[in-house]
Structures are given as structure tokens and as C-alpha cells.
Image 1: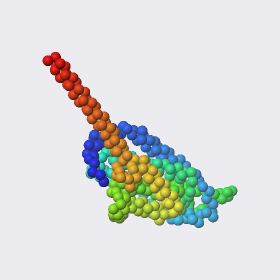
Image 2: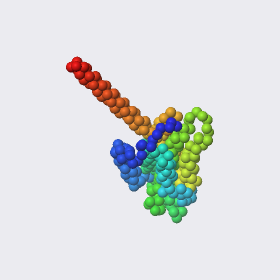
Image 3: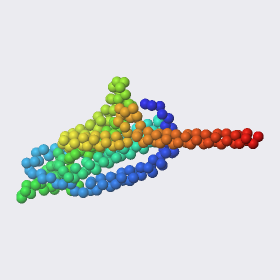
Image 4: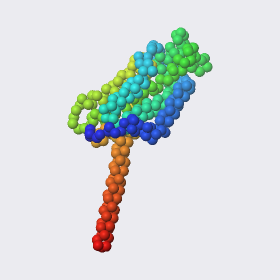
Length: 299
């Protein structure tokens, strides 16, 4: 990693300026939160479930191994803690700001995509039978054979939100972004062959994969739900990372685009200042020479 001094770009010195420049980005984040809230409030599509389809939907209705409230902790707060640790080391507010903004976009865009698909598809969960008939007595419409659920409305509503897995997509969106971040910071692709670096980068993805596996083990999702969630989270995290940072194998893959743009602007300003100083000095010297010539002519 190039040893460029970043101590002059701290939260105190440049934080307010960065926040103003990206005010619209932060406002759009709030809009994404509101959209996702609305998607969770609406009733999902109730897919037809006949008696013969219940065979694969009678798995036990268990509690979550990983509750939903824990997902933002390891998908957002854990990576942000690592971003802060790096900031304390390099003192680069550009890196901190764009990393936090990028991971929030990654998770929230993923959440909107995931919940939109959930509501549109309405796939029953593997434990749908016990959500629909908590007393174990099934009931079906005599006209079309569709289920006539007798369970709690809130639990039934969640029963139609199997595809894709939200836990998995959130995990890969946040931890996948962290994986990209680590790729750039520890220079995995520096062509020196240090395989230990690659092991460090794999850890976030392994953790996200285990979260997805727990959803199948808890009978809250089919394996295809988890696979689709992993693809969505991985794709969005990749796009969001590359929006703010260069590819990790790039020579400058350790810092955000904005940092190098700022350096270029400072170089231009410095060049202009030096040229102005040179011109001013040259003009002063010419004026002095002319005065000396006039004085010599008078003598």
C-alpha cells in the first residue's frame, strides 16, 4: 500500500464538507428505508396451496436460530466497526464516509429488492402447514381446494414470504461488502502469493453462508430461497462497492475514488498557485529591471 499521508483528512476537518456533498445520497437512503417499511406492511401475494401441496410444507415451526434483529448487527454494525478501526489507523475520512455509505446502500437496496420479490412471489415457507393450522386440523375451500387458514394473521402473512431469504440476502449484502473492502485494504491481489490474506477475506462470506444454512435448518426457507438470497446480496454488494472503490487488484485499490480525485484537484490548485507565483515573481523582476534602466538613463 502506498504510504500517502492522510492525517489531514479527518472527520473534523473534512467530515461536514463530505456530508454536504453527498446530502442527496443520504436522503435517498431514508427513502429506501421508507420504501422497505411499506413493502413489509403490505400483504404478500397468497399463492394457491392445495391439499396435495402440503406434503413439503409440514416441517416443524421452530424459532429462529438467528433472529431478524441480529442481522443488522453483523451485516452493518460489525463491518462499520472495522471501518472505524481502519479510520483510526489511516485518518482518511473519505474512506470511512464512502465505506459506511456504500454498505448502507448495499443492505438497503438488497432489502428493497428482496422484499419486493417476497411480496410478488408469495411462496409458502416449509413450515406453512403449522402456521396455517396451528391446531393441526387442515381446512380447504370446497370450491377450489385452496387452504382456509385458521392461525394468527401475522404468522400466516409471514408464511407467504419464503422466496428469497431475507436473512441470507442481508448477510451477503453487508458481509459481502466487507469482503470486498478487505480485498482492497490488505491487497490480496498484490501478486506476492500470500494465501493467508485470501483466508481472511473468505471469513465474511463463510459467516454469511452459515446464516443462510441456518434458515434451511430452521425450516423457514427452502434451499432455493437461500441460494437466490445469496445471489442478490452478492450482486448488490459488488455493485455498491465498485461505485465507491476501485477494483481490489488495481494499484490504487486500497482507497476510494473520491480520495484520488481530491488529490488531483489539490495538485491542479497547487500548480495554478505555483504558476501564478512564478508569473508574479517574473513581473516583479521585469518591473525592477525597467526601473533600474530608467535610473541609469537619467544618470
